[in-house]
Image 1 (tube, rainbow, N blue to C red):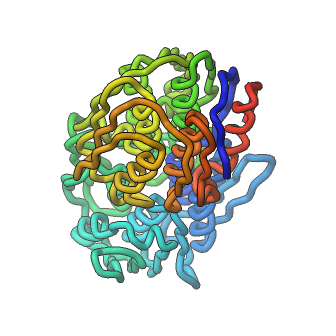
Image 2: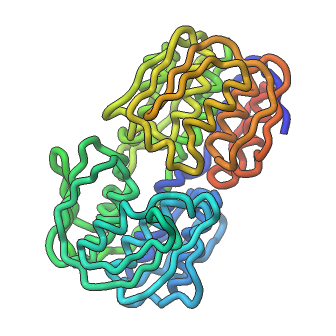
Length: 429
């Protein structure tokens, strides 16, 4: 796929439903006896994997004009799968589903594609085993396939050594089946979609400074839930507008959860002209973001800010490449165990585009300036593919992107939206 430098554009867009929230809506609705109606689910391949897996476990999911009806059952009435549960590329599916199944009476094998099969699962195996679950990662280094045999769980206090919303969520979902109160301590807050979703489905969950807790044995109630637009998907277009002089863009109906809006904070620190309007706050904050294009400056980020923008660091690296001055990112070693090693892979491709980069063990340094067209590779990573496409839209000359098809993992309509904006017209996704 080829890209050329685009001119200023104006547009209003809607991005697909939030992928992280969509996973959780499906899984928690599956636990709530009765019919839950979910609107705005992401159509990403990752979310489709979650739907397939819960259907294999005996949960009925029906779609009517974009509304998904999930007929949930208590965990004791889930059906043992007759084949492996294929999580495809989705680490969220594998980790959260393992947390649920750890407290069931079922046995299941969770598998994934080549990318997911390289991702670390010992970080959930160890704490779930301490609770009484029977889990085993079958590949050296604690990697999938993951075999889960349910058991009787006992609640524990968990201190997360690595900031991970997926690990936290797996333990919270296991805690629903555990005897006693499960407490999870975090050094830095991570996205709280699971906590909000559980509360929406009737679970009493308590927040405290540094930890969250829930009592096991609670029954969930079905509910109707509208998934807001994905801030991670919106970030690509917000950055494109911010680095395009004269551009003007509004993203409508997008999630504005404070645990996910670190990308907006960084863009504002870079000098981007943003207007953020919150339209509702429960169960998830939702609103619009308006941005005017112009000149940006480099930024520094690390520590507690990283969990709030870990998925947006690749596209922020593109913004840094076009900004004045130096950008430094630290404490982001988690980027190395995503769909690719996002530090090495991204910096390698940006170097091809003329960017001066320095790779750090836990981040990177980028000297801002200009981008030049080049032949670049997505490394099979959807966020790298979209970031490099945006880079190509601001580079001098032509950029050719190999492996563009992987964007379907999270955002099927990405290139259609990008093409419409490149034409300078309005777009309503």
